[in-house]
Length: 433
Image (cartoon, rainbow, N blue to C red; front, side, top):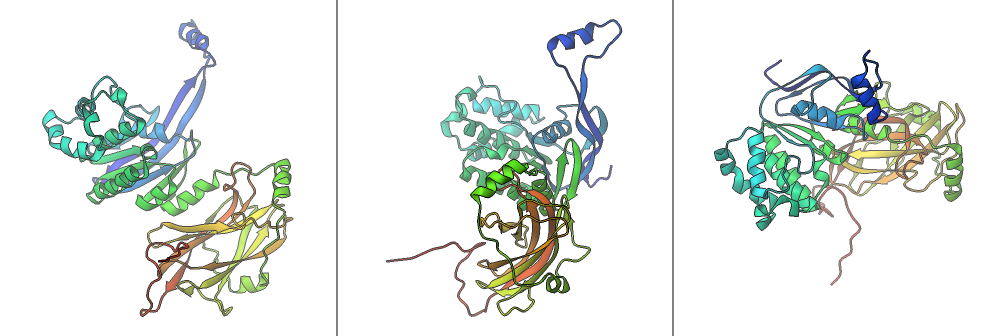
């Protein structure tokens, strides 16, 4: 194992024996000919990856894909059925709410016990106690039994323990979904601080904005296997693509009755778009492929091709959709990212309640999106997508195509202009006196 690698996961699989009843388990244990009464369930299948020192890796996936199992194996709580795990350095893990806390002990006693389990001496924990108390900010409850704590107090103290012991490797599993927004911001600021100090971090969360904001790399797990690993933005995009399922015809008919709205269509021809398309054969893309973004062209308010725009002015995105198979209730949209990979804006036809016509295999449709760039000056990348109606949730679609890392869009402003706002984007605002 390379000295620069903090965590090495090689061909790890984890299987469980599932029994239909406790009687079946007993029959198998006592059967004279070792007859099997169980079925095997593979929670992880041949998972391999490495985490360099000082890197932050995000792990995404739907519930039941094996994320928590993987982290527990890395921490040594579970043993893999096959494969190997190698780690370098002291691990501090926050896997479950208040994991390891004894409800009968005080918060202070639990801090010392947690430290001892992680290999810290009483003197080392003494040195960190003040920082832990200040970060947890639960006041006099630090000396009260943990069973009197709210869930928010549990997570405050557990997180304070995990990050204030200066670990070499920090592992966080969905813990920050608990607590108010002020505590969450405090946690993310602290995570960024310890990452900047060289700590390696494995970060599991359904909060895709957090994954894109703090991670250098991300892994998408699906059915216990690595489905994709790469840049956080593309991993998040592929994660969303796993969420929607094609809606059955009966559901589509019901929803269409509610959304009998006009079609938004561009006057630009398909040939004109393809002649000046910003999408190349080498563009990064993924999806089911039943409906594709065949081409896209960007024009300014003078109808000239341009990817540069003055702050608060418009660009027109002309998107050519092509059906590879019959598609019911298609939609298209855009995701805009700043230079740090933060999602600035995302919307499309469905968010604007615009109903596009059903497409037969081979048919094409041109859609125009006119976007006012009420954002700070700078460079932005974007992705374009094509999806179909899903009845899972209103904002989840069945992803047919998503073209990533397009651009850049350059937003400019005259140096003598007073900026109308600060921050990522402009919100409607009025002032009176």
